[in-house]
Amino acid sequence: MITLKNITDCDLRTQQLVLGWRNKPRIRMMMTNQDKISIAEHSNWLHELKKKQNHIHYIVFDEAGPFGVAEIKTDDEFGIYIGRDSYLGKGYGKKMMEVFLKAVFETRKQVWSTVKKNNKAAIKIYKDAGFYISQDRDDPELLLIEKEVENEK
Ligand SMILES: CC(C)(COP(=O)(O)OP(=O)(O)OC[C@H]1O[C@@H](n2cnc3c(N)ncnc32)[C@H](O)[C@@H]1OP(=O)(O)O)[C@@H](O)C(=O)NCCC(=O)NCCS
Image 1: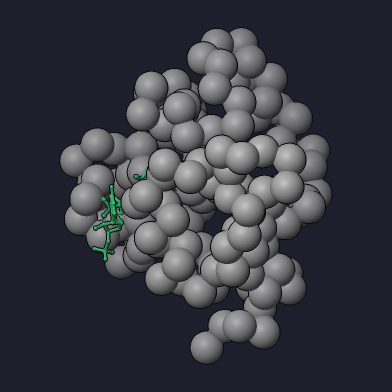
Image 2: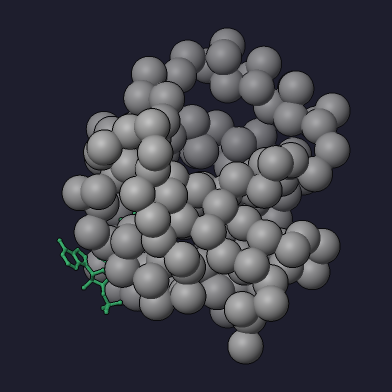
């Protein structure tokens, strides 16, 4: 079973695991901020996160432990990634998206994000989840993806 836990409620080991995932080249290259993150920056980010309302950085678990991340920000922007390489290509992206959307639509009416045009796996997951996909007006390499709670079946 896939479950979500707020990173601020996780133990230090899990919080540090996330830093290692976030700095992997295959993950960084798909993010808006592609910089490598230092331990100090990570600690500071966690500290600030605790003060934020409606910005939740979930760690995604299955029975074996943590394997990914799903985040929702105050302005309804979201992001997901699989951190453990052994979980790639097995349908976990789709499953975690389902669990995550169910959780966020309990309190929000819409979610949105941007995705790089070459990120075929992510685009497939978003299409399957019923997202509306359009060209980002400001960046030819990006697509804008949106979904409203009314579209939920
Ligand atoms: C996006 C991500 C979560 C998807 O994880 P995943 O579940 O392992 O993805 P898969 O490899 O199973 O691919 C998902 C689907 O896309 C399809 N797909 C993957 N690569 C593809 C390609 N190059 N062309 C066409 N389809 C592709 C798969 O066949 C699969 O389709 P299916 O559900 O019909 O079987 C994972 O790749 C990841 O963490 N990426 C880095 C971070 C990221 O890009 N996050 C999202 C954008 S912010």
